[in-house]
View 1: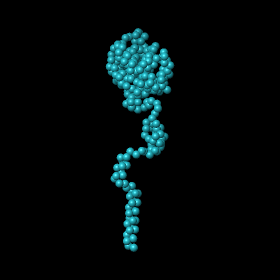
View 2: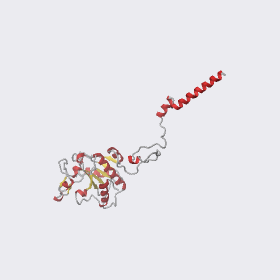
View 3: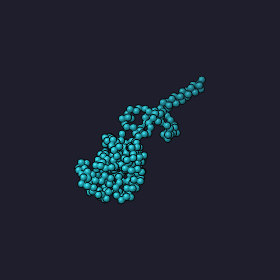
View 4: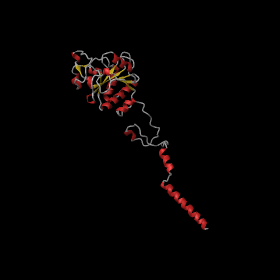
Length: 271
């Protein structure tokens, strides 16, 4: 009988110790290492951190980990580096088209242009660099949304030229000597103001108003993203105009762009 009591006491003691260990969360050192090192899938109901704005995340309490898909439209939020990385953009810098410094303090306008011709952005840049006119723009946007940058954003290039007399005052700019004005030629007393190049970024879109009925969605979406990148780069929102605003009668601003221009000026997107 005494032996049986001893066994019973031992069994009871072991069970109690096991129960206490389980309740205390005991686990072996090998198991702990495995938990920290394993890359097991997260539970299906974990809260997913994403690029969804905070106001939208607040309404999301518990969603499947696979529920948030990549955006299908051009995102216009993020740092300058992030926005640039989202663009189909290649850099093909052409020093022949550099005409002076343009620090962020002098960036006030984005001037939109049409090439009034076809081709690819690369061929447009090659033409500018080889024709001796010393004229170009910072960016060329193709119909498929592909972008070539040939001038750094903090550098002046000749894309706007002379403007209507009185426009320097109207736009609040001056010709302050930063632009070397190489290759420029006055065009008449009606357009005697020269200053816009030194205060702006130029964007050329591959488009021919005589043959193209509209701008492809991919091209416009690329311009949306490019404007967002320029805004983030300089830390301010430049006023958006077209070349015809600066000099009356320019042929490189197609009538079909005007509604998009209104939208860009209002909310910085084509739609």
